[in-house]
Image 1 (cartoon, rainbow, N blue to C red):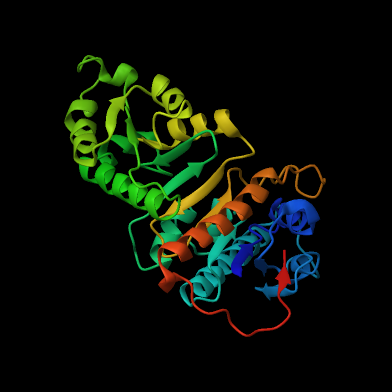
Image 2: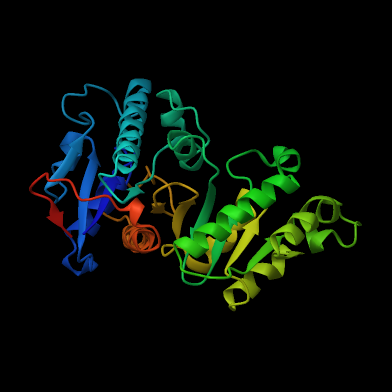
Length: 325
């Protein structure tokens, strides 16, 4: 039996809604999966699951206006505590993988969780391990070398060592979690036309080409062609030098079907490829497709992790009343 922890994310956003809709869907095809839902108690109550871990209350008796600073802080605190609880359960062997609904970065920061995003935060909670942020879909896999940083900081952060470490983390995950014996990586260029022999920048020759050679990867290849080549089956993953070049490619290729995967953790973690969508929360119009894909992929990766390393699959705890999704 595969055991997943699903956090509901920011209680003001669409996380509780999309998680509830997926878990209530009899056609979700999650046979052999037990789900533990973690979030605000009054939102968990609407989730059709027998295993529930409350981290506080959200709406009942708040006495706050929707835009109040205190309400934002409390939303961040609930989302943050849910993630920390899920990680503790994964590290203790109580669950095999975690799925995180979207959280609001500003709310998390105000609540005292000062990380650029889930990726860096999870790396710290797992013992400051090397991690990488992958966006995965059937059509394309993209891994970000730099993540949530201003574009002006990218040149200083984009080092040969950083690209190599990201590539090695990616290759290890593709072998262990996707079952690829010899992963084919490509390195995406940072400058137009891959620098045009230095005319448009020297990062390709100075930083990216040595990294690609060390990894046995193709590139650096221009951003306007490398993702197309990957989608045609030439590469198993593309290392993108900065956030938006990689995110734009995957969202154009597979919006609503892509899944955020944190590579390098001692357990799989997935998340939908979208944000909290505060503007449509509560309207019933949120699309649960990416959350459904995230839950299914987490279960798939957990099964593969068990097959590769039995040590990552401790015996199931004896707590009764789990829901089989």
